[in-house]
Length: 225
Ligand SMILES: *Cc1c(COP(=O)(O)O)cnc(C)c1O
Image 1 (cartoon, rainbow, N blue to C red):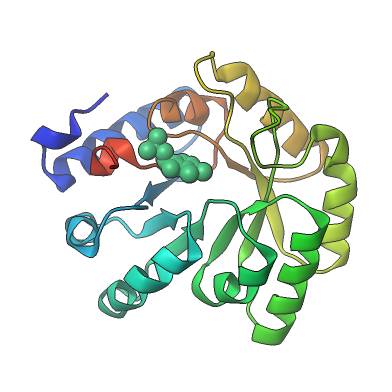
Image 2: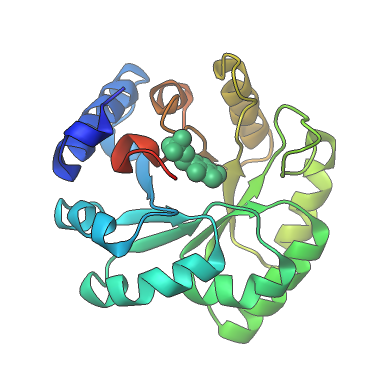
């Protein structure tokens, strides 16, 4: 794992990209088959700018309000930024999320599908949607149960949401690979190509198993307060 505090943003980005490319190659895929999403939550514009300057364009935030405060100004400087929402989304923030984000990774319940469909219809903008799965069936975690996935996907597709894949956060402190494999299996079963999985501690494993995007915060920005 890189030592975030002692390296420049460009060096950290280079390390993560190199490791990602290696894992993708081992998995028989091209380096650009895995999108690196730099998770900039809690970090201020001053910490994000060097990462933008180093060429990174996909970023992720987990709170709509925080993203609204930081990103319009940064997007004015770098209009080709792609912004991902990776956290829990409250239905009453659906319209704001649709307006600001290019992809939404936390679609996990019927009421949110309904809210997002209405927001997309009103805005005439359709961010990519990932359905979040509670892959370890952990009561404290977001995501729909595997048993509820077929119904939620039917509803989301019927409502016109552009569902591109599945997203999950595996249980902490256990080997993540079986959970990544389980998510990949579910995506395949439902005809979905997108797999949003892997964070700072396990993005190489995720890329090896077929992730199409990894969500990396700490390894790029250092620790969060
Ligand atoms: C914060 C966060 C990440 C990034 O985690 P790191 O361990 O800092 O890389 C990834 N995914 C989600 C959903 C997050 O909330």
